[in-house]
Length: 138
Image (cartoon, rainbow, N blue to C red; front, side, top):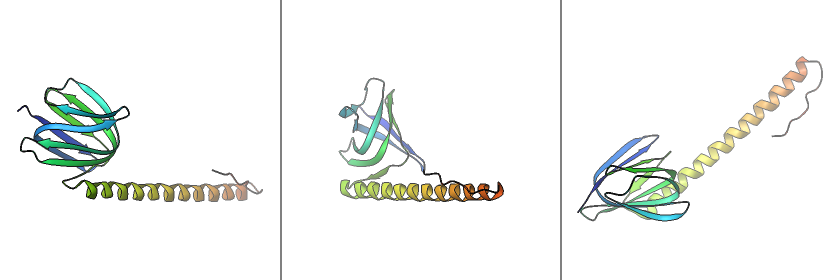
């Protein structure tokens, strides 16, 4: 049975699996599979779940918010902002959903803080110029 190496990279580090026989993921056109010897390719993966199996038949699941997959020379590389790896599909899907909710909340808080800073700066500029600052909506 032909095998390939799978390398996963995210902002926290990387994982490597040397005994992989199949990788399944999805891009904008739908689901696809990769076997050893696959032609060179690059795919932009969509938000969701991927999976792979080793030569012993052990499936692992990979939840990710999108990423870039590259296949070449019996090696598959996946780069993403964050991934969750595990044997239980439901558990890693929950982890991804929780992480994305936290990220959305952090972005919302950051935008609100920037808006407050902008309004404070405009008020201060108005005070310094002797007039009143006009409100700017963002």
